[in-house]
Length: 403
Ligand SMILES: *Cc1c(COP(=O)(O)O)cnc(C)c1O
Image (cartoon, rainbow, N blue to C red; front, side, top):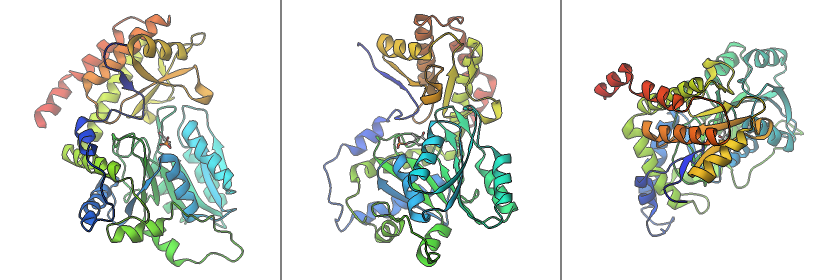
């Protein structure tokens, strides 16, 4: 294949050369006397990305899935109640993990394309007068369907009902890309990974942990008869204690941490609000394209559209995998596949991380070429044209002048 490959999947995302260069360094001694001079400010600045002042951010070698496990094992006991919802591949896998760990899951299965069901959550919490639900799970951005859930509303509900359950959020494809406010939303554990909004290779589980959780782990003894799930590798207390001195309890992925330093610098230099606005602008361009093609998003309503990934439904009788195959083989463009229940029914365009308008147009143009090859009916150029019009609208010019 001649030419660059185009990465238009929702993770891994495009890695800026500035980040790549910051990792192209000799391996280093993670017990060096001056290692804390690097670690301590990095962990402090990471808190800004999670928007937490009272909590802390722990970085484990691993990936987002490891972060899910860390959240559960550090805080819960076998048999504890967990309230969750399954509405896509990622929300569902976290539920499956809860079941594997012998947690007592109340799960609301939703049609894929819908968001966390607030009404069902409220009913379950209201009915739980004995507070056997110890944790409430929210997949903030369901990457399989391109759906964003309302985390703030779940926190408001817990407060309103005076329910003490912890709030755990999967922010793997949202943190650092779309608005996420750990403190303001009272999130107790926020899970992310390195290869999405952080624009890094895979290899880190980046986990925000609230003050309340750290206090609870240290000070609240287990109820008699409880079997604490327990945590070896992902133990929050071990990690936090070592981090207090600027070190890690075992060999950290130091090279990735150097990249993370640059990633955090880039996010904070652009300004988080500008990062979020850019993702919204780019996402809206993709959505205009989908409409112009005469297709629908997997997300059922506009209020839950994700600003980091769009899952596009193809018409019945056509196969989205044909589009993905043609895009990859004929043009070197990687589009995201439909996972599990929506396999063959959707293809996905990831629009998060290190991305501008022209890169989005490359993905949309690649999708148009591939849809032609796959025999999907649409007017060639319509989606690209709609996105171009959106990206050059007067509103955009005002934004640029203000920058
Ligand atoms: C990618 C992703 C995960 C899984 O993370 P891994 O890094 O693949 O372990 C979990 N949740 C969401 C929402 C994701 O997008």
